[in-house]
Length: 494
Image (cartoon, rainbow, N blue to C red; front, side, top):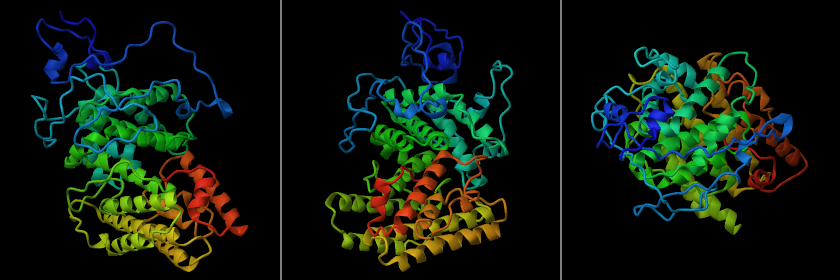
């Protein structure tokens, strides 16, 4: 007997769910070739719990309130390494299965799966209003998409691939991503408007629900893993903008969940724009905290140019190895000079300036930014290696020279790029340079972001910067990383 419960697809989009006898899918899902499942959790009976106002200025610290949600579960895969325990999860078993199909890899402009239309529905169009199917919201142009999401791209040439990857992810798992896209679109629309103040947490309840969704989501195939990667990096970015209390906890949890399926996802070229970013971001955090990253990056295609990290994708495996060596040094409290020397030579040999960049694919301005970003990340990596070898007040001249290289590249880009140029993809190297050159971070903050207000993650670094230089001026001569471990909390910003 067919179920009388609406499927997840119809329920999410508030459509009437109709079924015919002996059909596994409802009429709408069968017509649109969508996955038809009823795996969502039912709302518990009774009156919903009353929200509480916590913390300063009555803000709710949603990320710190984890104990009231059940632990998520991670399914195991025979082709992966033994899984570590996620920061938000204590179980590695799976007791439910999903009816969703595995990832079907085709070119985006071709058919995807069994009869799915060649033109993917656009997430902005899908969320553009509550119009009837006969009067759909107009499809946004690439320019409109870029205007809304340019903070997540080096330039407009990355718009199509990023948009396609998001659309594909949403099409395969709308029950996971729909609410996230809705919240992010509203947030970015507000914060990218000039002269607006920092947003009030009016949507905090929705964000809390999204965090709970990430914590309880069970992954059983590639599509769910892809959606969780998108959800995790979106929530982490939103948290870093608003409160910056648990961005890395969120990001790392999503990486733990998706890790068994990462080898398959890494082979799909058009998904690079959503699979590279979370892994690279976590590696940067591990470089600062001397931790071991969750996922070892796999680079299957030469000369990958990422929407956020540009030419630095080929640097990822070297940075991963540097994290591993740094973590060993932290645990053993012994220098690993020979290993650091090997990695240092690899960085010195890494020369993205010689990487081919198709002239027709990127604008001259984008090429300039891509080259500059690679140059300052190279100098920042050499600076980190130097500070792993030497404490503060030891061989400071070399450290300052690396920091000066970063600052000079910044000045060159701002000079040639014009007043509207933003170095929003060079925060990590510039922040490192500010720990060697005593400049006020506020003096360069306006050149680092297109947001209409200063994000919370920047405020955190400013607090650490003040603490750091006070300790140095007081005569501290220990390791930079000891101050990072013991000082005010801040996170890596790409």
